[in-house]
Image (cartoon, one colour):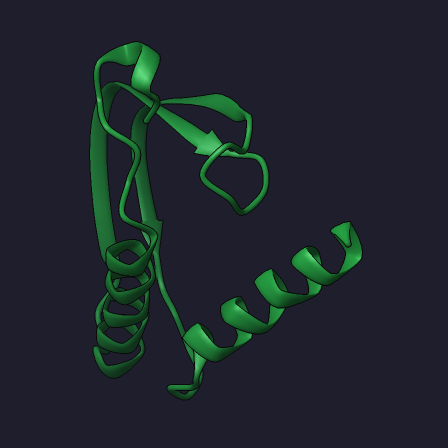
Length: 90
């Protein structure tokens, strides 16, 4: 979310941990995740970084997600990706 909407910027450390926990739990479970939403709007960063521009995504309906695979170090991949972005900016 954005400051302009009156919502503080997310803590990226907490966001990384939440995504990692969600993926780990989803891989471990055998059932699908189901979501129903009405007029859901989310400001999604276009790239990593606190000052990244946002795109507004909207969703109204149902979605089912299944995940197959093995647990892995997603967090390490995200951090590697962020490091590469910083290096390319230098």
